[in-house]
Length: 206
Image 1 (cartoon, rainbow, N blue to C red):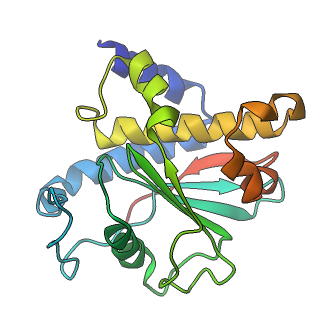
Image 2 (image 1 turned 120 degrees about the horizontal axis):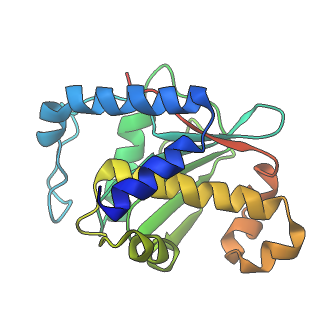
């Protein structure tokens, strides 16, 4: 078993049984839709990709607060150099349906960039992100510990890394003495206080 797979398995084993089951369903659904995903690969320049026939699926991760209210919706993409226009198109494609969830924050996570919307009007899909964050210094330590590069990590493994990072944010949010280690945008956006005492959940894919 390689180092990355071992760490992924250990991370999963720490989770409650219901989350482990959700991950299993998530993984099986990904296998079933592999052919569709191959047709939906992101083009290198992100300039000419049409979303008209792309598959619809639920977002990857949610964070709920201590009152069990969904606070943050996260979509993870194992890719880089995503332009603002492309990210906004992707967000529209994922959430432009009748089941759009109501949440005050939405996030698109790429290996090199994070787009965060602090949504006063969460159903307005024309809004530009409130923050665009350089993700390289955030995820590079995870890649190094896993002995994998951003270019070679699988999308599923990257989602696990993102979930670990989000859990670390929640952990630090619960301990004010550690908050200086966090990036300013987490505090300024009030995301940190919104998810304090919350938990990370994987969403099932349709």
